[in-house]
Length: 263
Image (cartoon, rainbow, N blue to C red; front, side):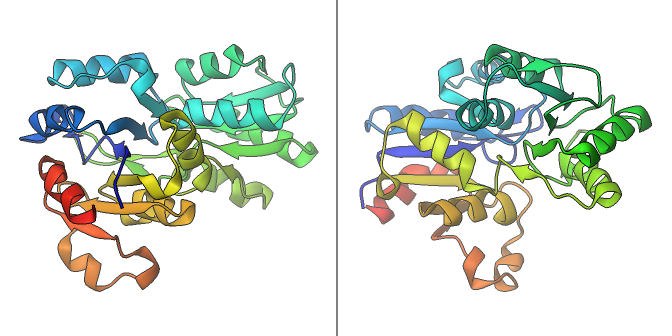
């Protein structure tokens, strides 16, 4: 199998916090010479593609906004494909998430009288937002989450992720959300569309078994685990066979050798 398109996770894979993983910028530059398309994929819905591209450029990695897909943008794309524009949305999420929804014709309002409750990471989440979301869902609004990551990393330790907020809503309403981000295959299908490659021509690279690798498996593409993030090598001995990556490497810096092994 020759890999023509790579879907690469960001935090824990390309960088850790604000520190680029050693050797990664050079490895990615080399890939560009091999005619391998790259799309960077993140479950973090707090920033937009332009902000992420700027962060990567400061780390010495060439990336434009079109090369990055966030779970917020993927969620907005999914909704535009499945639902009619002009519908009302109660959003628990960032300003950039709101912009993605409004760009696709949805009306974001501060009310429980809505068609959809959409959730991402929100540092201003409070009891009032929880109440409005629950009331809207009980009335019949569809519940959609950008991702269900329980935590997100920070320099001071873990922070509650979108999944923790979603759990509170599910506990109160009994309703589980439609999930667009990893480990759902929905975001992978959007990534493949943007790369314009077939499933058998693509691979996903990430550091989390339960999101990156599971997403790749669910979409039927090759999976590559890197050990620079949250997954300890010992964990590979404990996980179910269904979550075993096709290939494990120490770092994204070794991605060229990994692709040679696959091809």
